[in-house]
Length: 309
Image (cartoon, rainbow, N blue to C red):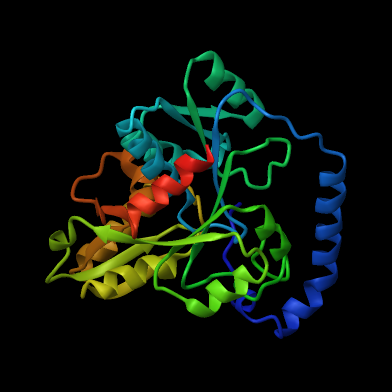
């Protein structure tokens, strides 16, 4: 979905949020009716679902990669399964750069059957919390501490894909960013059995961008999170360029950005996901901020998952 996230998604009292609320009710009704007529299927393979209810930018894909690599080290033969969308090739390339075993499918159930036939012993669904046809062993919901649930309303009056009641179907909450006790209390009131963990992104090539004025480019779900990460690491952002998530850049656009940066004596920095969109153009001197996901209480987090599968 290529959208700019409107500011009113953070304010439920905003006029536009109120105006669009009837459409949200229709959307919710459609979701409930769809669930009512779905028969859930159990597959002969353990399934970890890494999902979200906030639209985009919560860290699902880095978490899926993290789990796939860790379970591989633990003796499992996991595969990441992801629904195929043509305009999501940036994320497909990102996954394959860190973990090669990836099934892209137009139907997740078919992807799970392929995983079983290929003798994988663990399936990690990168997204899929809203696919109620599939019985999962573990449901992990990802949030970012900057956005959390926004105004708490469902699309289009808010940023949520489903009502907050669906937290009752989750097992683990993974929050990327700062600890938030108020939010923990809020979601535990919905589901007292939730296990809550925190993660953060650790830049590994920060020195490449120090002592430069930066032109920071981001075409991701929540670009402000990327800019904040740069600033937290004391990098100097001179200009920000924001594009919709999964934006497809043309070669001419990138050339113009490079000309502009050179003219203003700026160094370009982008997300790794954006880099995968433009590497096909083979430009020299375009670099991205490389980050690794780190999870606090890692061993407890992983053991919690292993106990559920």
